[in-house]
Amino acid sequence: NAGVMQNPRHLVRRRGQEARLRCSPMKGHSHVYWYRQLPEEGLKFMVYLQKENIIDESGMPKERFSAEFPKEGPSILRIQQVVRGDSAAYFCASSPSRGAGANTEAFFGQGTRLTVV
Amino acid sequence: AQSVTQPDIHITVSEGASLELRCNYSYGATPYLFWYVQSPGQGLQLLLKYFSGDTLVQGIKGFEAEFKRSQSSFNLRKPSVHWSDAAEYFCAVAPGVTNAGKSTFGDGTTLTVKP
Image (cartoon, rainbow over all chains, first blue to last red; front, side, top):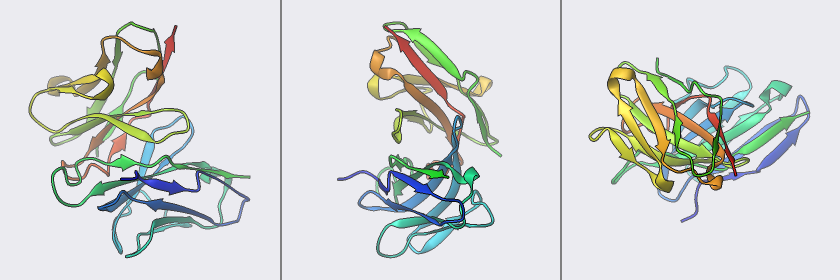
């Protein structure tokens, strides 16, 4: 069972471009969480999604950021018109929705490191 | 709102020495607490978690943590540190036992291990 897969691992964008970050949760997991980690800081929660639904987006910036988790395919975190301050590591985590340990543990991907130049 | 404080930004210990990393939390209800480890350029790996029951929790890689409600603390310990333990360690608190993915993280403690 592969872990949480994020791609790309590294992404470089010029200011004003769009960044798309992908996250494939572990098999059987239908809960996905996105976090942002700025340099020298801990992870900050951004958004919680289930298939085709945004459950909690209280940590998402109001503009330029959006997330989706379609019925088929990976979850996507999209950042439009990137600025230098968006440079960070973006982590995705997933957790199972049923069965023993449902949603009591989150499994993290290796992250996408976004650099805006 | 919940919050987590890791008072030590950077700790250096000698290999074979004991280790304690501090974590203080603020949360209005029963806290659900986690410790994660992050190696450079990698994601987070769960070391251990506390939901209820025995306040001394055993984790992977020889780590343990003790929940002390009176002190609002969840400190991580290891009796003998190995060079491979050098990494960044994060304490986190979740709002509910079935909402582990929406955690609030501390800013982390970087552990350096001297030979």
